[in-house]
Amino acid sequence: MKSKLKAQYPREYRIWKAMRARCNSPCYSNSYYQLNGIKIDKRWDSFKNFIEDMGECPEKYSIDRINGNGNYTKNNCRWADIHTQANNKVNHNIFINYNGKTQTLKTWAKELGINYNTLYGRITRNGLTFEQAIQRDPFNKLYYYNGQTYTTKELSEISNVPIINIIDRKHKGWDTEKIVSKKVKIKI
Image (cartoon, rainbow, N blue to C red; front, side):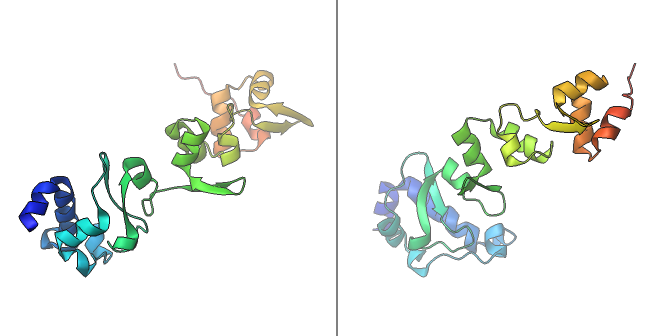
């Protein structure tokens, strides 16, 4: 019976074998799964039971644990595409709550039509808040100098400090006075 099922569901059989190896094989003793005690439901020791519970795997899908810290069980597993799985990773996602809705940064980027790497860089490298980062011109930050309010571009024009230097200096935590008073070193 097992070989008949194996022949009928070769892809699912490979997924089942790989799942069992990740969790049980001594070759994977230092794997995330074994180090974190991820187990497989005893019912799934049988490939027949696994197929009964999970059904056929849709094309371009693979097995995904809904709770990434949970075990491989009928109630905690599903067939999922790569995007769903990427958004379900434990400890690898940045979650953003915006307008009462919490999603991963990747999901926000896709929903807002902003390149993920651009959005990620604006937040992590440039130190922008999520709200600033999702603006089409996130560098249109306001600076207060000599009793006036200036955009980055305006501050650059009145101080003769290039925009990139203003952004870099602000990221370093400099106040506006220091940003505009420090001369820019020109490399020759």
